[in-house]
Every structure is written in structure tokens, then in C-alpha cells.
Amino acid sequence: MGAVTQFYCCYFLQSVEHRQSFYIGSSPNPPRRLRQHNGELVRGGAYRTKRKGSRPWEMIMIVYGFPNKIVALQFEHAWQHGYKTRFIGENDRLINKKNSGSAGRNIHYKLALVRQLMNHTFFKFMNLGIQFFNSETAVIFEQNKFGIELDPCYKEFNKIQLSENSLSLSKYNLKQLTIDDLSEISDANKDLVTNFYDASIALDKVRIERYTEIMMNGCMQCPICHDEFDYISEDPDLKPYIVLCINEDCNYISHMSCLCRKFIEEEDHQDNDINILIPRGGNCPQCSTILEWTILTRYSVMLKEISSK
Image (cartoon, rainbow, N blue to C red; front, side):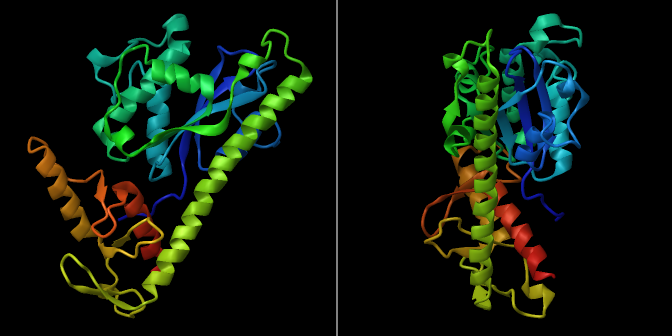
């Protein structure tokens, strides 16, 4: 099993002054990338976002949860090239050519692409999340102009969220924005993106510290297969991939492979017509907390890397 990235997202920018100007990109650090696009950091930023009159840019949403940079780049490219990407069937493409005029630049179309990509099997089992920083963008997404329904798993795992105190530009006169208006919007957006990113990183740190402390208990037994593992042992065979519950009040721990089989059996029981190889998640056998398989896997790999140092 390869290394995982702590955080990687694809982001959607919209020019504050020119609301029909958009930019799609990807980054492991969206606050820093936003500052680059807006010229606050000298190095970095794409040529298109440096064009006169386009700044400042507002990061209106991100799609996050990618296991690594490569997968994020695949999503980014598909989002930028919805008219030809292999992740959308030819008959399902909303636009079939690059030079599609205003239709291809429409925000409804760009948000519809997100729905289509997240419904593709390749991305769906990653349990990707969407975080909106602009409330008007969230409303447009929910309007779902093209009628593309998201797989129910995203609602089941509560993966579509709007940031608290999200921006709304309706109170501004967009045709006569002052320098103070632009600064206020830009700073507020930067704070929203930074708060979300910092909270995500902080949560990972807290969980890994708790998991590491649990692992220091030495020899433990998997409650499913009853075999033992020991992460303080010198024997690498006693250090398999393990998973732990994300509930801070629960100390459930088992082999990754054992819980994987259990979750698959439970999903198979719900729909016998689907041949499941990787589960989306399930309930903790001890406390019933809903667990996303991609999150469990990421922490398992991180713990394995820590133990091997």
C-alpha cells in the first residue's frame, strides 16, 4: 500500500469583479495557493489568474479527500475538460466540444461536472467531500440545473458542507466595488479557506496522536479474527495494517482486512446485485459511529509509516 497525502484538493476560483471568470486548479495547501493567485505571494499562481482586472479571486469551493496528488490531478483535468474526459461517457457529456461558447463557461455547467465526476466509480469510492465558502455557489449547486443526482453515499456520510459565516456577495454592488469592498471580500474568503484547512490538519494531528498512544499499549487482539498484533514489537509481522474508530470516546481497533470484510458483507447484504471490492464505510462494531473507509485507510497507512521509522 503506497503513501497517502495528508490533504489535497481541487479548487474553484471566481473573479470577484468579473463573475463570469473562473479558474479550476489543485493544491495540497489551498490557503497558500489562493494567496499566490491573488499576488500576495510573489512566486506561484497561474498566468490566467494574473490577467489585469481579474484579481482578487474568491475560492468559492473545494473538492477534497483525494488520497494523493496524482488522483487530484486526474479530477482537476477532468473538471477542466468535461467535453472529452474519459470519466464522463460520451452520451452523458453536457458539452461535446472545446469551443462551446458561453455554455462551457457557465457556473451551472461547471458545478454539474463535479456531480458527474463524483458519481464515477473511480472517484465515488474515495468518499470525496465538497466544502463551499460562498453561500450563493452552494445554492446554485443545490438547484442542480442539469438534473444530475449525486450518489446517496455523499448525503449518508454528510460530505457536502457550507462553511459557517460563508460569503454572500449579494450585499455588494458588484458593478461599483470599492477598494475597501474588494479587500473585505478577499480577506473574508481567505479566512474561510484557512480556517477549514487548519481545522482539517489539526484534526488529523489529534487523531494520530491518540492512535499512537493506543498503539503503545503493546500486544492487542483483533476482536474479529482474535489474532494478535503489537506495534511496539521488533517483529514486522506483528505490525499489520490496523484501523481505529474516529470516535475519541471509543478505543475500537482491529485488522484493516478484517473490518474491510465485515463492511463488505454488510454492504453486500444491503444490495446483493453489487460486487463490492472496497467498502464505502460502515458502523463501528463497538460504538456504532459511522466510519468512512477512505479515512480509516489513510490513518492506517500513516500509522504504519510512523511505526517503520
